Amino acid sequence: MTAWIAIGVTAVGCYAVKLLGLSLPAARLEHPLVRRLAALVPLALLAALTAVQTFGAEWPVAATRAAGLAAAAVALLLRAPFLVVIGAAVATTAGLRLLTG
Amino acid sequence: MGLSGFAFGVTAAGEGMTVAQACALSLLVFTGASQFALVGALGAGGGVLTAAAGALFLGVRNAFYGLRLSQVLEPPRWVRPFAAQLTIDETAAVALAQPDRRAARIGFTVTGVSLYVLWNLGTLLGALGADALGDPQAYGLDAAGPAVFLALLWPRLREGGTERATALGAVVVAVAGLSLLPAGVPVLVAALAAPLALLVERRRAR
Image 1 (tube, rainbow over the protein chains, first blue to last red):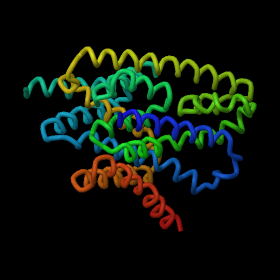
Image 2 (image 1 turned 90 degrees about the vertical axis):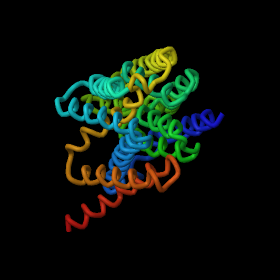
Image 3 (image 1 turned 30 degrees about the vertical axis):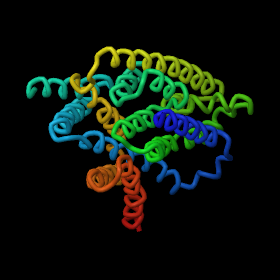
């Protein structure tokens, strides 16, 4: 049930934000400082989410996830397509778990 | 994007969402990063409000796309509620790259509708597939979420020092907060890295 409430709140909120952008007069949010901040906040959230979802677990689980993340970073450095990046992370994590049982 | 919808379906199932919940998110929320953030926060035991707040903050960028798009597309009033749901990274990128209004409208609509269909089909297949597999951790599927976030933020890291400082600061705050704060809260606190990095940038510019 909690999950459904969270889904409802997120759905309404995310839609409202989208509609607000399309409906507001442009001058309102065009201040350079506001735009700069609006670009940086998602970046901070994404970085924090990456860290939390990697390390927010018990030691062996977190360590194998971190290895998967490192594999994803290598794939990104090699300019691999999105799905190859995700695949590299999943395969590395699964492989290490198989090996260390 | 159909395939990343697949990744979302798999991740959502891995974080304990039912197939119906994963599909409801893709149908109703339809903005990838927010969806991944929500299922991740709920899966980690975060509260409803902290989980939804993280997803909402990530969705705020769509409002800025909307501002630019309303000038370029000039959608009639009755179209706005539909156009709003399709206002995401990809449709904004396509529409804003077009030379004139007609091309922008076509680009926005075609990209939006096809991505909506693909994203939702992908989610359904991913969630059904992950459900059939069983324990997601055995297949390393819990590594997909962090890898998606890294892939999303990667191009931004090349933009400049303030971007890299923001990301680094957010990681430090989030990791430090992991053992100190309730689930979901460290991510929200880490958002403060953005105004802080901006403050430092302004000081230096002077």
